[in-house]
Length: 219
Image (cartoon, rainbow, N blue to C red):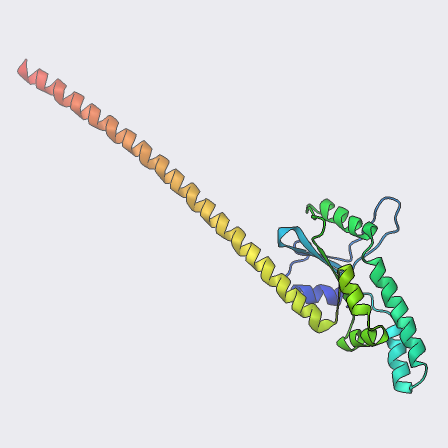
């Protein structure tokens, strides 16, 4: 995805920019080179989904080689090397710490271990070419905590994200309504208690008036 395309896709799933996600935020640790994940999506329970959508040009090279029938193995080797280097760059402690720091600066506290990293490829065919270039790539990525996906896989992940976010929103609204009803009930209780106090006062006043009138009549 280009930046605009990814943002539009996230919004199409009902997510709100700067509330549910950030697009291409600049992240950096002290003394480290700046990095820009394509998107950070915030999930309930302090989880985040980090999307890296920088596709390798070697995917095109493999496609052309397959179409021409020449240098297929060499192109596949270059693609495997590039994608594995990219995979390793997404799982460094420095990268995870930079993500955590950015989330904290954005008012969110990322708990260690609650970050899901997605390596996005522009087509499902591109993902399949990476798997053919390196049959061990998928397993190595999963062991590193990286999820390689194409468009269909990303849509499935975003659907799951949307469901979790909607569930949290409904839960928040439930508590807001519940708290609002509780506040109204407490206020009504205060009003009724005050009314009872007034009623008691009026009753005492009426009793005093009746006693005074009775004494006046006897006089």
